[in-house]
Length: 144
Image (cartoon, one colour):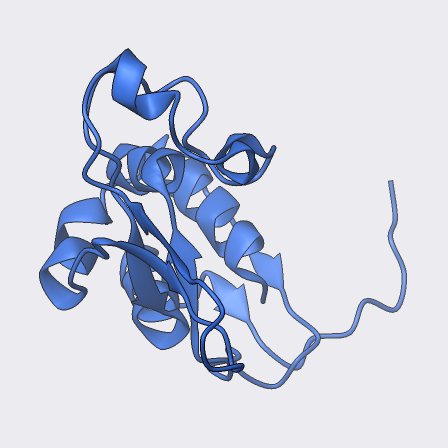
């Protein structure tokens, strides 16, 4: 089951909707290492109630450092600890891309963490009742 599907399921369950998910895979996929979660991702994780537990497991990133493999070529560094709109505008344009999640948050520091996929999957899984997901399921037909 994909992370987005798990988060959606969590939202339905939290809203009081009784759910049953028929999943074709034989188990919850725990493979994959990590991903970078930006400010808006943390807002979403807070809304579904798992942000604080994940923050306790993952240190915030302070910035990015680009290094050249060729000696003598310049490198660049970007800090995530930038406050205020004037400083924020100095950040590179790539931080304003659609999926990065920092565009619009100009009032404070940016929260960026590298999150282990397993930790996110387990946090989401722990928030839904046992038996909500049936693995190795196959739908033969649907009747009205």
